[in-house]
Image (tube, rainbow, N blue to C red; front, side, top):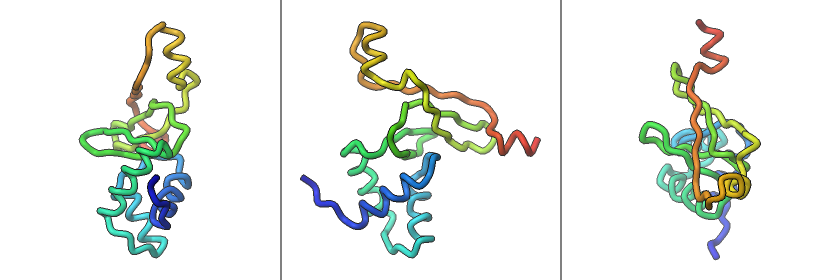
Length: 124
């Protein structure tokens, strides 16, 4: 069993404060704004631990890993103007449900919607 540290707790707190996806760099910036002196390498290491423990989810987009809190349905929206990633909670998110519906064992899935977010839409 891994030791639970104040650093893990701080990072998990940041993840659960937002509805959006965050990169490791964004997590680090949020921690710095709160007065933490956690280094970026520690943030990466702890994000990996939190993913491994099933406390947060990881999604790759354009060669960058983004993280979000649970529950997460593996469906997300990407703004084609500003590259913002937004969570999309879709009722079919449960892998057990999907497995039962298609009669096969679903281990992993991802659904991506692309378009223009509300912020960018207002600027048009």
